[in-house]
Amino acid sequence: MERTLEVRTGESIALRYELAGLGSRFLAVMLDLLIQLGVAAALLTAAYFLAQPLAAAAAHLPATVGKSAGAILAALGVFAGFLLFFGYFIIFELWWSGRTPGKRALGIRVVRDEGFPIDVGAAVVRNLVRILEFAVAFYALSALAAVLSAQNKRLGDFAAGTIVVRDRRFEAPSLAAYVTREPAGDDGLGIAERALVERYVARRDGLEPHARLVLAAQIAQRVRPLLQASFAHLDDDALLEHLGRAALPPQP
Image 1 (cartoon, rainbow, N blue to C red):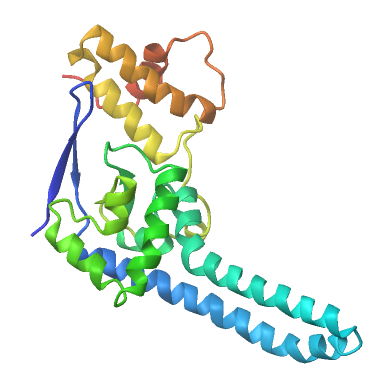
Image 2 (image 1 turned 90 degrees about the vertical axis):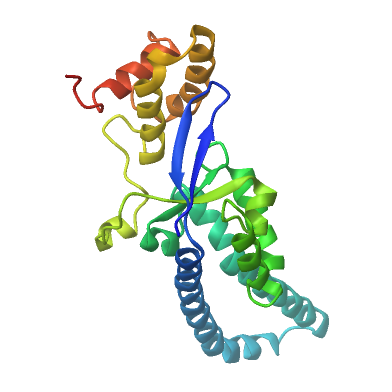
């Protein structure tokens, strides 16, 4: 059975999310793992063909230099492995607003507990904990935590303060859309930021004046750097109303 979560902000705005299930999260991890293994296989093949020329070149170097070069290459190999299998998740979750290629294919994404897009700190923490989860019986600990958690959280989600939610119904992306960053609108906002603006505008009339100012400032702080125009003449509330009203359905 699918689980839902209602997030209530400090300004008493309720946001409802459909939580991603264990099955979709597992399939997303498997797709990401297949991509990682494919990249690793390509890198190892390249290293195999480069090994003999490098060894021949190293034979002409002093022994101490050769040992140092070998140690450096080994360290680079370890770093590349870490970057591929764990940095991969951090980079994509930040680049694609909480989605890796696997998550994007399954129509799910990571967000903060408060419903806001994932930030650098949360992405790093949840994926460093992934190392422990991967090491313990290949995510078995993660699966157990998600089953027992009312919010389908794995250990990394608990540590980082994140949840994994469903996007709109899945539509197969074109190849061009799949290899590019999440598209922005004409005003420069991405899907996640536009959703925040539209939620605010839809609920602003029911907020207390002080709560409206506080929430508007929080959202405007995120969206202003993305805008293609400065809008310096508009205060935070007026800016969000300007950006969001056009996207709302007409009132009867």
